[in-house]
Length: 282
Image (cartoon, rainbow, N blue to C red; front, side, top):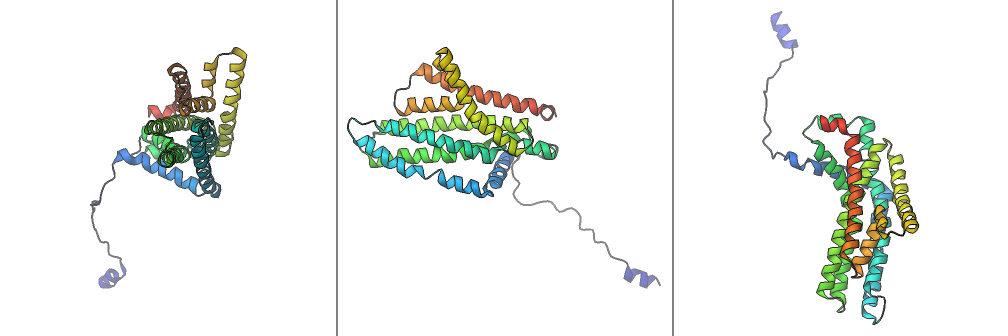
């Protein structure tokens, strides 16, 4: 009878604890996982894929126009072409930020996922850095990449564009792209933190994108103070781009425009920290 009981009972094998012998990921790189996940979710949408392709289509047309403008004596010059190019790319920036950043913080607040995130080796700074980096990559994809390609094509194909012109154009593209990424990322995270619905956050972002320009333009016309244009991160970036690309940037007005961009970024960071203050304390 004991033998029958032994045959019917299941055996338990104690294999013990087997330590992981593979490569351990550094906790400092966790923000890259968050950014990659945000971009992966955005890439699943067919309209985002189409937008990424359409945003690169103006590049060959502006390259041809820029070459003609640089070669024609007494023409408008390549600076005017660059101003138009940058204004068009700003529209694509607005759409890219809409697709990538609308889920942002609000979707995690709605799902209650922040407590789960921070219970793992993911710090508060890493979480925000990953969310912001996903937006910054989207902005760079429609500003930094085509802008540098346009500057390189003009430098290689046109003898009228000197090395100094190329460095000025490329440096301007890097500076403007960095300011756009910093500002748009901070503002979009703040907008997404104020509402827990991705659709509402996206609409609020688009409205703020255009309303800020109208508000700054109205104040500028009413007071006559040109510096108030920096209150709109769109107008400020456009004016700064025109000044840099047309080689007529003055230090004082340029610093005011840059300060306006940094002010929007600081406001966005303050809203996010205030909205997530209980997680900051934890």
